Image 1 (cartoon, rainbow, N blue to C red):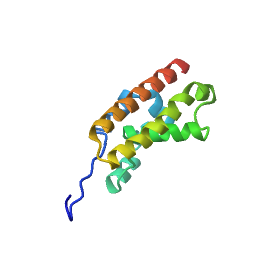
Image 2: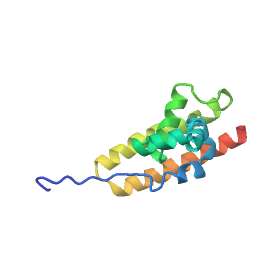
Image 3: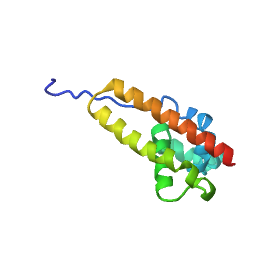
Image 4: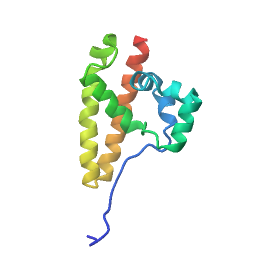
Length: 129
């Protein structure tokens, strides 16, 4: 084990622009202001001066689970999305533990499970719209 260096395993979204393309209904439900901000020239200037909040896969999954937990999803979709949100909470906690334990293989499986669960939730959201 190194004396000074720390080995860290992490999961990150390669390109955040892929997130709204992959899960557009979820993205719009969680961050409804995102498209408005993209079109606003003042917002573009502000983003160039200050870092914007991360809106990657893990942030979407976490925000979705939080929205479900605190009843901030559209009422007609709450019951249909509850199990996916609960699963995401568990998967995110398990992923954090796997990354902390440097278990790359388990982390990879959990990342796939997170994306699959987001796919399921996206399908439900599209059906309800």
